[in-house]
Length: 142
Image (cartoon, rainbow, N blue to C red; front, side, top):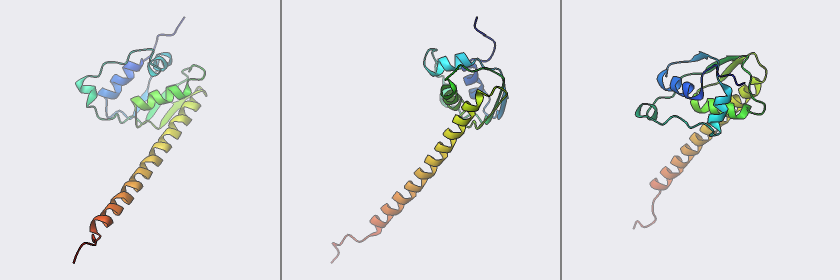
């Protein structure tokens, strides 16, 4: 018998869309539903005008307590949570299986910030190089 108590992936998306100032959430998640939605077994909710133009939810901390997670699904759960809550950085948990989810989110955030810093640095170098080439004489002046 499956446990059907808890918030579904669709419910989390609705929270993210409607509660943009939410920074901490303590909730029982239907992890099986979240995994199914992430791998495409459950159709995502159709985008509406409201969700298409939404501002990212401010949620940074999710408290999950002792919710069990399916074996081998930590990466899928972490990526699904990052997709729904792009600013999430901390998972509060009792069940040690969530440690892998927390570590994946932490690594993903570190990579995201590192790539952002590299992109910014490359953009400045490209702009600087283009400016020097634009200001350089063409050699045709007489």
